[in-house]
Image (tube, rainbow, N blue to C red; front, side):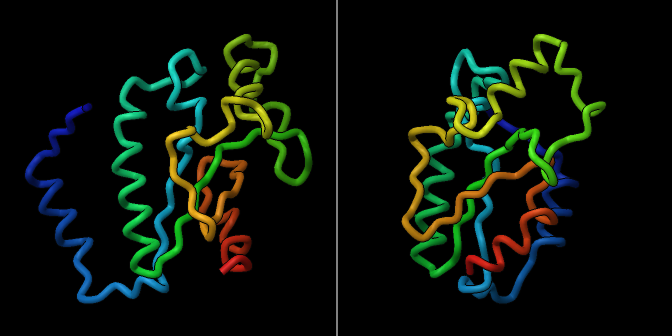
Length: 147
């Protein structure tokens, strides 16, 4: 597994900024971002040799969140030409072969767009497409509507 070595100052800062006396699981969500084939499988456009290493840990976190009464949300990076979610034409150079391959991989229905087969999606989990690099602003109302 890929090892991360955080400097002591970063660990201490994280402890100070993420100290909560109480977390209400019913008002908490685990957001699992882009656990898609495009990022996790060998031969895919954005393959990362360490991406599959974290899937068991993500599955354990998701199971713990469900058991505690929290919500699990899985996002999928998605490219579309349909308004209002389409990127402006100038954003991607679709004539570039790498960009074209990336667009094709992240289009809804493509093999690269699917969540990795080892990801354990629960019956009450939310799976949503995100059309920008952040799912939080764009999809907040969709998540609220499903809760």
